[in-house]
Image 1: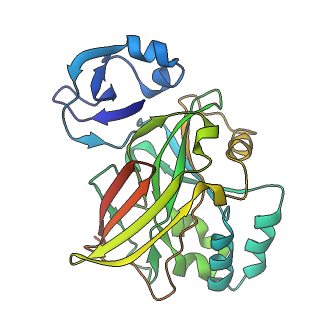
Image 2: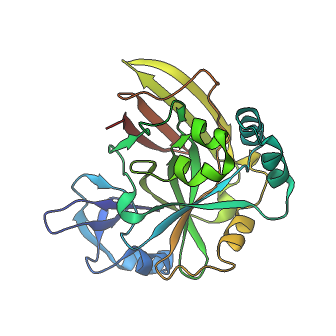
Length: 268
């Protein structure tokens, strides 16, 4: 089952498997319904209108870092404080950080941004968990944790500036409703195109994540309440080479499973 959010003349509206749901339903409402209840709330009206980021304005997106070995090695190579990343990779407590609130999340087809004061910028394709207010994972979507490696590499304390700025977070195109167990072997693919040519391409799998998804969610909810639910990016296992940096006009394509998120890069 697949949830999508659409732009309509009457405002945003949710759909299930290509058919509009009851107009009054929010994502928080939907996230607590069983598959049978979701089906009961589906109309016969085909979904229409452009796709929006599958996030509500009152929700937050958080992210986990250094959950793949490749990410740890890259962070160590770029940073003057390499031991920080080695320690967090093996520590009991994961790295978790705030990424964006709902209005700042770019959707499918929207532009993402690179910072004007950064010389080294990369996309980070990530399995992104959809979590309800009770801390239950009800599905996943595709996330792009756009990051400034030059700023984070200069000092780990600059992480918020490297990670949180206008256009640094994209999510979409929809939410695949499924169990955590079914996410254990999902292929993740990244392609960056420039002037119609592929300039970077790589893939990994969610089976390379060091920590369990349930563990990441448990830590996020330990001392935080999310009354409207939230999203959690689970880290990246694809690291472009050191000579690669995003440029305005690049097209970033991320595929997880059968779903694809595309965004153009801007620097304005």
